[in-house]
Length: 469
Image (cartoon, rainbow, N blue to C red; front, top):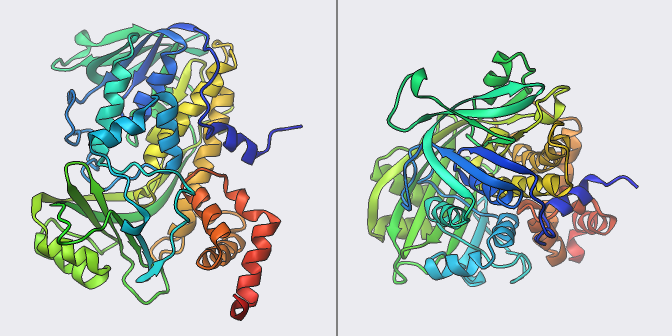
């Protein structure tokens, strides 16, 4: 019997370690030391004699935002599915991160507001422990654990291209840090090359220049603007560990999003966001005004009474985008694409880092099947498409409701929107539905789990007979 999409997703999100790995190649090259690149290198270390990572940022062990990740100073979330993958590939990671300062707030310190109303959270323990920190803190830990592996090496330089022969990738090129000009380019022969260079990936151009088809690119213009600021954490001001606030279209409230995270170093990271022409600035008074007027009280308490650490940082993301490599009729063997180089989503939903860890799981499944490396990695791209589809569906369904977003609308959009609204309304009254809904939105389960008859019937009962609940 063919594997269903939900079964495939369950296999990808499994936290079980693969069996004894088999070495399949001499050298793999990973372009980019982002979360996606580091996770890919970790998986490849089980299957290659040598793994070389090429990264342009020279951050070392720093926990400061990297120049190549301009959004690094903003709020980031590691969803439970990503949390499980980090512990899968780096045993003891969570305990080490918590000991180093990452936060796992108790339920009474976690709040979610929709249209200004406090929503019930999932029952304690139903999603596992949280792992909350800044992105640089988390990435630096993953980078250190990755580079401690004996057959992984990192060099600093800018990825410059790939070389192809006989329908496969044979090498990667990079410009070493501090050099310029074609004479200083380094060409590294490789059995496998991973593009993890992010949203600005030039792989499509490299393929086109070599006469290969380019993947279809899909964009959804979200025009998201946000600002984040760090404050000294002070229990006399607030006990909040996590606070998420969202105003939905049609609520009569400004379409703004916000978040407070208690992060390492006894700090709060506070975010305010808007869309289209609603642009938070770097001015702290503008930041405080937004916290007072559009968010729950803990935002104003922290913004007005907390000690500001550093400056307000802003970021703009014009669109969500995906490159559908799985649709290519021809694709070179020896080529893998991971992370934002495949797809990047509205960052409000916190799917980026988690998707990157799941792409590593896809890579592990591909390599564990003892593939013929002389053939394209079709099963890998098919698995990645399952992950991308889940994240894309969850984020773009909400983004399509924004008044300034005008498609593209997927087939069955109206029905899907109606069903999602039905389920969401019922989650406020039904613990089992609430747990399943949160397992889907945190990428632990495939969205089809919510279409099981028992959940549909319960959601309909709450909608049709609200007085009986």
